[in-house]
Image (cartoon, rainbow, N blue to C red):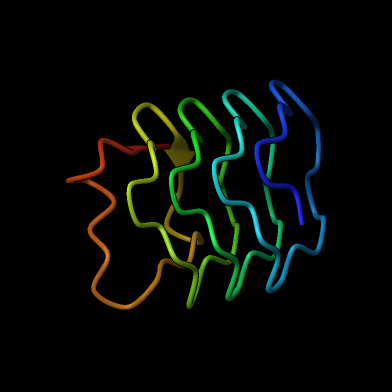
Length: 92
């Protein structure tokens, strides 16, 4: 449970946040490469310019999440029906 936390630029690559409650968290520029976010709640969070390469976001709630400028790759897993390009995610 990280409601409203500021983790700007944090290096949490490979971390397990499966099912975590990250509502309204400010994660701009954080490194989450290879992290597990399956089933996490990111409603209203800011992940702009975050590194999501290889991250698992299956089943995550990305409602009103700012992903503009976030970095992902073909290994990044998204929730069913989510369009990362429409969310302005950059692919490496």
